[in-house]
Image (cartoon, rainbow, N blue to C red; front, side, top):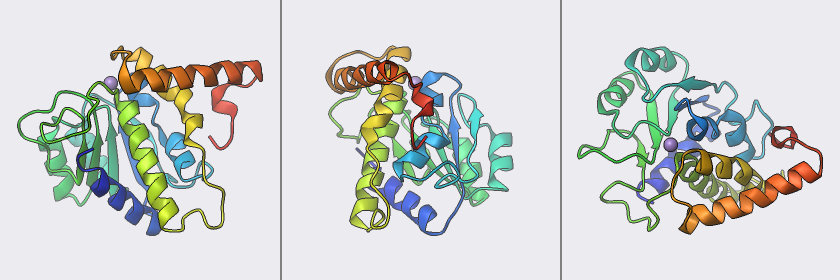
Length: 213
Ligand SMILES: [Mn+2]
């Protein structure tokens, strides 16, 4: 996926430098699923790990006022299910020293925002073959790429590697709720995710109760 390597590189820098990262999500299921505790599990940390000061903000785009507020506390913002058309807002963030990574799935405008990385299968220059992912699907691919980079850099030398399949019940929920076509990669994500729902319910646990989320 276009810009995936850039996104992973910036998040690795944030992890190494213990920078707080903020997630800015749309207000629906798709934008809410990849919330901070979800990301913490990617690095196999308890809440308070990777996103130790993370919080979920709402909006179809990161409004300028919100960007100004967030720039006082954070150096990295990940916009999920929004951001691909937020050229002006991301320009403001850049001016304030707040780096932005976009993980979106909306139609990309002709001008891609000046973010550190813009993940969106609809970018004309993105050759990821499956275009119908929801934002949680895009975020899941980012999580997988981040885990691989952490593995290769010895990030799991002293702690167990997370099994990202545990996130797929929530990815399935977002995929269905966002009403993206249930074919290709989406079908695979939902099929595995639904099996996890069944397993979780059989075990009498709510998804949010399981470790390490
Ligand atoms: Mn969406």
